[in-house]
Image (cartoon, rainbow, N blue to C red; front, side, top):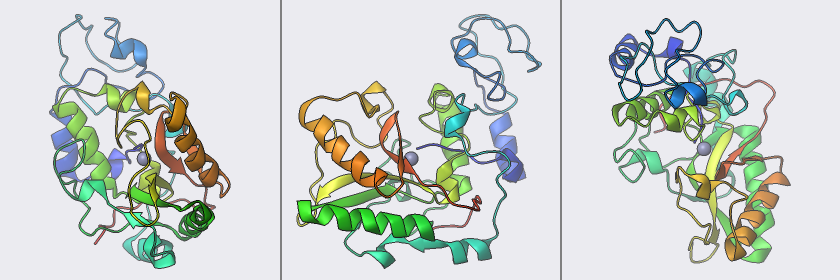
Length: 269
Ligand SMILES: [Zn+2]
């Protein structure tokens, strides 16, 4: 999952909505660490919060931040225009129609139980270089009778903001802090993808041990046995051969480097 985008890019209404919610962890990546998340009672330096009493929720001034900076899209990445998104993002099925696509955030079949803003059509968009690499992965799996099934690819910034707001509403901010949901996502750049393996003909999913968006250590790629280990290895190796890096906390999440990353908020239609 991964990645929120900058609040600076959020609408005024969104910022207001995010300010009024109560959250346990208040600051930036450097200070908002697991110690504060476990309610040590000592405010992180510089956050301006009053000392907290364990078990008492402190009114929030901002949203949770992913502690591990390596899984966040950098703050310095520029926001692209709609015209740039139109030029740079391509539908992976335009390159290979046999890639299965079931965009989970376009309807209620996801961890929030509701469609996320910014998703309308069932289309997996990626930066062209990444989409071309993904088509090569699909081709490489064909001889084994396997293919890819995509659950998420390019994700509009507004959808990331909605995910973070959801964690606040349900008091699960640690999903952001611990890196299961990134507050600045590489999905917003069109370079990250969530996917699994299917039988090419039947589209039956292989056993990967957990569903998509399982927020626990069971989703950690190396935390598997038997057939699940083997199936995850097939996916990771096929993706790695085309320069997709797996996120070790989520067997389904991969990212690809491009020369000029930009975040986008264009709606998937
Ligand atoms: Zn992901």
